[in-house]
Amino acid sequence: MRSTIPLFKRLLIAVSTLLVVTSTQAQAPAHAEFILAVSEGTSGGLDHARVIAKYGSLADAIGRALKRKVQVVFAREFSSLEEGIRSGRFDLVLARPSDYPARAVRDHGYQFVASARPDGQCLIVTGKDSALQTLEQARGGRWVLPEKVAYMSKFCTAELRDRGIALAAEKNVQYVREQAAVTFYLEEKLADVGAIASYSGAAKTLEKSGLRVLHTSAPQPYFPLVAGQRVSPDQVRAVQAELTALPQSETGREVLKTVGIQAFDTGSGERLRGLLGWLGI
Image 1 (cartoon, one colour):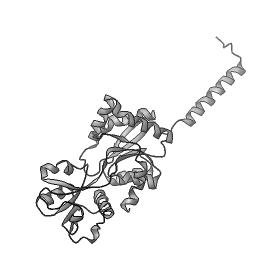
Image 2 (image 1 turned 135 degrees about the vertical axis):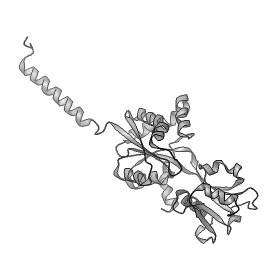
Image 3 (image 1 turned 30 degrees about the horizontal axis):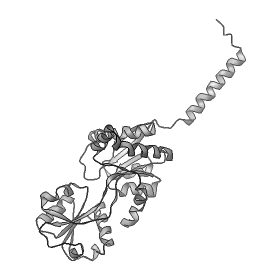
Image 4 (image 1 turned 90 degrees about the horizontal axis):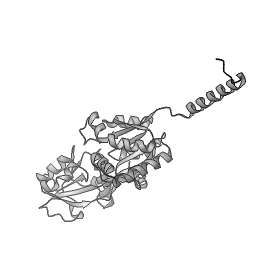
């Protein structure tokens, strides 16, 4: 049966439909999902499947705010983390140590979203039976720190600098590969005072190791989340609202428990932007 719509009107409808489809395609994003890169630094030991399982629920929460699927990618090596940030391949980065997200913001146009609570701190520790009672008394003693290039070593060096102790001027400073080795040196009386991260496994076993905290540093952002240029400022604010609300529901609290943090802090952006300057890098 021939259409009763005049030919001219049919052509007009067809052209209008084509223009709508073309306009919609032009506005559609070039990719259907965002990529969230996760790095747990050198302290993890997780494989890709476990990282997806651990952070999948967090990615889902972020995806709800973005109205887009968020795919978790495990950045096992720092080199791959840096490459993904530099190239903009990662839309979101959740990483420790914190200097990597800080460089993403300073050098590669990423936006601060949130950091984890509690903040990260450097703990200056000594033996329970040590005569040391103040940080000043540790001057001239036998120091042990994580390897010199490690973030926490730079963190603790900056803190000590602010407290008037220049490690470069100390005559007996040893650097070891892992923070567990720091506590070993102290337990075996091979050092008088050491430095570890507040969020490290070593910090969780101080009592068992027969050690105590001599000094706690100023707090700095821990495990920051930053967003790349494909994420708009409005989307960043939506993600921040979603993350801030997580402790208010049982489902959200389960997300935080799975990731291993207490909450997200969306007010630590200025401190993250100042972190590299404080570290002197």
